[in-house]
Length: 565
Image (cartoon, rainbow, N blue to C red; front, top):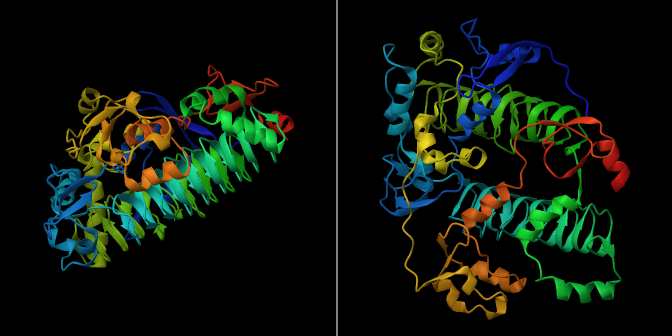
């Protein structure tokens, strides 16, 4: 790993958490580069007041991926599935009516008031305009999904694309028959896996690629018919990292397969593995983790084919020259403090969920738009302020005046405030990365949702210790029961396609609620922090997402390659 050369020009204290963070010459160059220009005058973006982590926390508070509710569509009055619980006082339209109905979000415009706080006016717009129930495109029989495209026969799948017959999963792409898994790409018949690519018939495995017909693998590549093994390359018929004959392997597997649990594997497997300090492939001048085919990436992770990115995550496909962005799949350029975007993103600032978009500022959920300031839920518009249509000249004359007033109120250059987010802190993605108790969230001026979805009537609720371990002993009647989660005691149901998958692959009924299973997978990701620690082989100092006090064996790249290859 070669680190980007940057010169520290200032060290600031975060206004929220008081942690110190550095401002470099590269940062100042970026802020100047993306500062918007109106009628020839550059509206300079000053350095941030919050540290990178608090900035990320604020952006994530605007994104609800996986909490779904039943409520009425405010246009058709039919029951729909939505990310907005029925106690929220927004107008919410189903997808067909929102995109194709005879209505226009400019009808909800307000005049800019120079005597009022800008964010108060933006909040009025956000509360007035009808909202889209879910964010899906080109779906077929996948109503209980969100932030997806081209999904077929899927249920409770989020932030995924081009996949079929997947259940209770997120970050799935070009895959099929994936259940209770995350970060799966180009794979089939996957269960309880995390970070698996180009694989087939894989169970209870992590960070393994091009593998098949295997159970309990960690950091294995090009392996077939292996069980509970780590750091294998081009192997088959291994159990506990020991070679077996083909016949002996299958004899042992029949005995062992149901003798271990995934919880045991997750707790023990990393202690047996040699872990590379970071996953960085075909990249240069990068710092952090999970970076592929990229250049000049700092303090970012899950970055693919991108350049000059900082303080960001989940950027793909030739994203360039952007800071503090969070989303996936589509390329962006010259964007700052944004989350969730699509193709055609260019020079957007402080924006949530707009795509495609060009030179959009302080806006929420606008589609195929450009040159907006403080707008919400517009389609195919340009030169609008607070959803009001202006001429280009009027727009470029008024926006600088608004920005000057925002500077006086300390509103300019900061992302949309968390307290005007339409979601509770506990509903949004931020709660997965930065969990808070209700009292702490409210004390920090953050929203909280107390709404609880009514549980459907069932014949009975059974504790997990009453579940048969053998799937063939589970009766069809389980579809009419609820199971009590062994961790949260929250009841959950089994759906028909789920039961069919378990029976086909001889898998026991899960003992944890789908929400808890998701959180278990979230816990497999290292925190978005860098630590200094010594290589456990050569003692070379390195930067890694594994803290020095953690028990894993972490090697630098040279020692890892020498040991594994």
